[in-house]
Image (cartoon, rainbow, N blue to C red; front, side, top):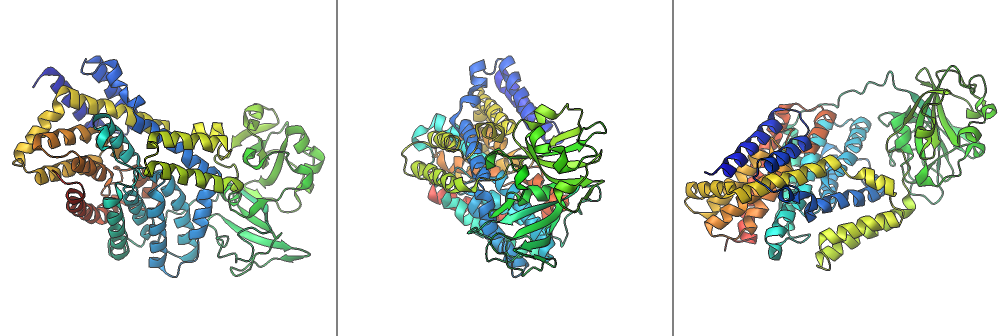
Length: 590
């Protein structure tokens, strides 16, 4: 064993130890390891930084922009509304959510899919009395399996394929090649979840949200004519018994409906008065077919996608105090419109323009970008706070966003251009067509994730160039008696064990050079070994630590660590057996 091998192995073990035993951010650990490899001479500076120019890593960054376009145009909200129908039973709700999650995660990265389905599951649980614990963990695991159906589904697939393209461009995978293993795993996973969740998952409600100190607002929204809500009931569109808001009354032509039942049918131009906390107001603005109703004298001359929600608290010295909203001329002074007012945490009833403003009032206003920067130091306000992700969706551009996504998938599928080129063109089109602004596109990229994956490439390169991967591979081959199937099983087990304690992408990148070396030492094709690394690195079902979406549902579903083990361990074994049966048959060793 030479010095470079020893240094590489020490750094790899150190990285695994720190990631598994501390809360230091993954990107910091991997960037530190990259620097150490360069300083120790194991890698040249260009080799250490090679991950930042890797097509797979750059494809991940471009796809964040594509997904942002789908979110900003309301495509994700439209899809969720199609799913948000009253389920007949708990298993019916599970089946509907799992099927939708599996389909969506095959072409959209897992994280935004899980983020979208968590509030949907919470609403179902609250509205229909379903245990949240029966919905979130199965949904999360099926999203992971659905991500194995295409190269787009998870960053692990893209990262490993990016490495594979560098060494074997002739064998690089196409968009739907993984479907041979991903589709059966997703179907089997859905069946497993539907059958086993009643015994393996608890009947546990979500942690009760403490809303006593939350600011409560009332906001009026109008049902747009010819929109998707006309002719549907309050219950059908998901506006009945929301988790943090409710429909107080409906103003319909010349009469007022004060008792709003779940079977009340919405009509065009209905004006709904909704009461809730700021997150509920934000969500109402994103519902297709609803528009926030502002007094015409306070309406802003802004395009829909330019509007943002901002909370401001009036100071004692504010010139607005003591005047009504109408007298204060708020819109003229600040180029912003007051949507609602909260006082001492409670909404203020009555006509907005007639409310006399007081010091300490919290105003929810709709403003143009730059409002916070311009007024955050104003003596009129004690606090100026932007409500994150509050820009209304521009539903008119939803067909454009969907068309761009489909075009990206089609051109890659038929090999017209590579996924790297298709994703960058799609991201550019999302910006050029106005589906997402350049600023929002820049913010949508998860830079820590991209940096972590890029930095982890340095570890993979070091394992390869130092000879450490060959050393490990020779050991594996000797222990498996030069039998490729046994070597494949060993690679799967090692990758699956690693991904439970470190991130899935890092596990895939670290195991890739080892898998390639094992294939070479066994005299077998590298394809089954590469596919095994992709599958095993994503199969992080046993602990909340192995996959970032695991942590997203951990608290929201009120789970304990043992819930992950009880539900995830059998699924991990099933996925391992099915994968090891299918992969050698689709991608043979010779």
